[in-house]
Image (cartoon, rainbow over all chains, first blue to last red):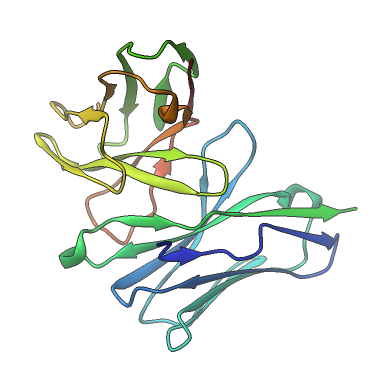
Length: 114
Length: 113
C-alpha cells in the first residue's frame, strides 16, 4: 500500500515551457514534504521542500504547492531546461510520534526537449 | 567536500554470501539511513539511526543488519544474500532536526546471482 503516489511515470515538456509534476499522499500523519531530483548513476539530490503549515514554497525556477485538503503536492518548474531532465521523487516525512521516517513515491521521469 | 560516501559502487555476489556495504558521512549528521531503489517502487527505507548506538527498522528490514558505533559510519550487512536483494542501495544522512533534507550518497549497485 503506497502512501505516496506519483501516478505519472513520465512527462515530456518542451524547453521553456512549464513542467508540472504531481504527487498524492494518503496519510494525514505526514508534516513535511520534499522533492528530490536524480540523474542516472548518482544519488538523489534535494530540490525543494515545504512544511505542512504552508501551501507554497518558491526557490528560483522551482515552486512547490501543497493542498492539504486534497492531500496533493505539485512541483512546478518554469521555465523548463534540458538540464532538468531527470527522475523526480516526491517524499513525505512522518510526524515524529509516527516513526520519523521519509516515505518516497515511485518517481516521475521528466524529459525536457530542446 | 565529501558528504556521504558509499563503497563499493558495484558488487556481484552469489546466493548465500554475506557482505557489508559501507557508508560514511563527514557532516556530523546525527540521522543516517539506508534505502533500496527498485524499478517502479521508488526508494524504500531499510534501517535508520538517530544517533550513535541507536538503530531502528524501516519498511523492508528483513535480511539486513545495521550498527552505528560512531556518528560517521553506518554499515549495512547482508547476512545471506538472496536474488531478491538485487537492487541499488543508497545511504543518506541529515542533521538531527527532522525538518531538514537528507543528503544521499551515489549508491551501491548490487547483483545477487
